[in-house]
Image (cartoon, rainbow, N blue to C red; front, side):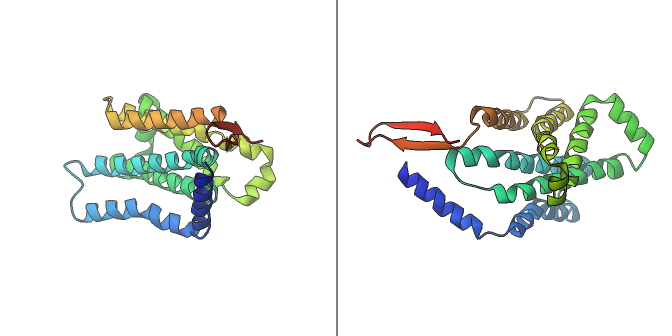
Length: 220
């Protein structure tokens, strides 16, 4: 595994040269594509539904990307930690746009009806719970909040492991059918959540002197 360790170090060296703002630019690409499709009338027979769903899906994809950072580092030694905050904030940005599109385009800014729908429709209730969690995480996703909240900051941000599967369930419930892709995303989220306690520390790959038998250990 020495070869892979060297490769991981090379990858990490390249990643350190990548500015965080590049992640934000990449994160805006799906929004740009959506705006292009809207302006060119390529959003299908139900444009409002397409806008809402694409924004929601994109939020979930970036949320999954953020969840994958820690398992990736622990298993492969490739570190994307410095990009995790950006991934989370991009996910929240798309979630906010998703909610805004629903309230503005779908509900016509009829706040009372929107509130009634949230209460009556379980999938909307789940979606709003997840959005409120993401809002709390986004507002406190800064160094000042980390210093002021201390250990409470970490406890609060553990809620991302609740928000992600709730978002996936919101998506599945909204579709009203069990489609393969949303189910695959939910399965991936549950796997990432499970890997956190299963692999609590980075793996350390080592080989016996004869170079044949390989063991896996965890480093403290």
